[in-house]
Image (cartoon, rainbow over all chains, first blue to last red; front, side):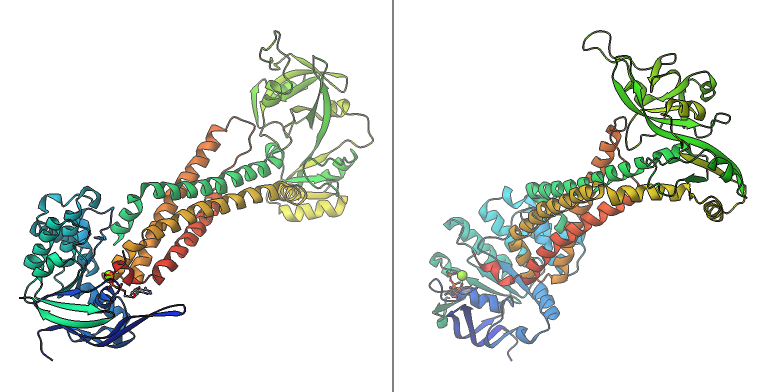
Length: 231
Length: 386
Ligand SMILES: Nc1ncnc2c1ncn2[C@@H]1O[C@H](COP(=O)(O)OP(=O)(O)OP(=O)(O)O)[C@@H](O)[C@H]1O
Ligand SMILES: [Mg+2]
């Protein structure tokens, strides 16, 4: 296996069974994501993008097919091992930021480190350092409610980065932001989050940010239609 | 993750206070109601403790509790004195007699007659006058609550305060004159009638003429005497009932427990306090968890184990539990303190702390359990849902 492959999905299938109606969210996905690349997942609403990154991030089990993350098959992993793997290797960015409202920016950012066994003080110190990198060095003690949407998303990016994960998954990171702010957030993801030992998967509807992608995978109805080089 | 759990909890001020209030309420009810219960129960036998001295109480076999007067013949006193191991045995009269007040109304009083020579069994504390003054003719000692309350003389002017009985005042007990020679402090009894102490012979003189008038024979054992052996011996030789002080208290308390609505009434209060507290606190705590479900899901997605989340919820429960418990117990103590000079019965032994502590713990465990089940079943994949 080539070592520059971050994610390798083969014939991934996921069917939601909601009491009678069966929804095929993933109907046999083959997709490879390389280290050092920013892969965008695009497609119409309901085509399965969120489902796919949930499987890739190891928070949802597929029904069939395999998905290897850095050569590891999360499906067959022990529950504990899987948690550890997720804590160490995956960073999350959400559309709705999902910051803990009663924690300061630095405390929010420190959580992944604490979950990886780093002491609180050290974790918050490193959290503040990363906040500096995303341009929020002066807001480490602010609560999410005291920050703008764009600032909150930057805190969320800092949280996704702080433990130096090898894969960052983002679901619609710019949809809640205006164009300009979204642009800044993408710049940040591309310039600060992306480097040669890390892959980024970004789900988006927002055509205006397609330009940040290295490759774009177009999905429709639970399948990958095409993967195109964006450069 | 502990500090995160605490911040999560306290970040939601409204819910946090709601949970605390529910637990405070439960803890208050579960401490204060039993404290009153214990207070009332202990009053039932406070006369026994006030008499203090004797080791053994001898009475009619059929007596069920301390206020259940079933008199003996005077000659029983001498039979008890004859039992081996008895240091001394004294008569004690206890009966309800009607006192006529100066305004013409009647008040039932608890009249205690003490052995004329020794005055053993007198009030625990004299406020004015001396116990020996009972030897003066027609002398009686009145308890302070009676003297300032039910036996007080009506006010001179309208709406004025009643005038407390004082030394030198007279009353009529069954049409016989009595002169107040002292005011005493006694422990409040269950019946809360005025208590009047006098000598045995005078008490018997006040009482309506009956063949039997001796209520109790109180006994002091010789030094080193085994009390249980002695009570047994008294029973065997006299055919009367004999109890040690503790046994007599137990007999009295048991009677009230078995034959009155007191335990069931307080039991219902405590149960309601528990249920209402559990409902408020449990519900609010569960709601708090539900509202934070997304936060828990984010933590789960980021790799927090169920064990970690469980500990966070338990810590939250322990915190609200301790604060609520502390406040409830504190309020109970405050309540008891502010009521210390009133008629209210209130007693706060340490066992009550354990009792309400267990109650609050149960509520918190119940609240935490609901939340824990919810969080353990939580799918981390919901984090991407809008
Ligand atoms: N938990 C679930 N239970 C049942 N059906 C689900 C569940 N999650 C998703 N689905 C269905 O699976 C399909 C794919 O959903 P998914 O959320 O992956 O789409 P998406 O591409 O992310 O859409 P959007 O762009 O609107 O976010 C949809 O038809 C959706 O209704
Ligand atoms: Mg989606």
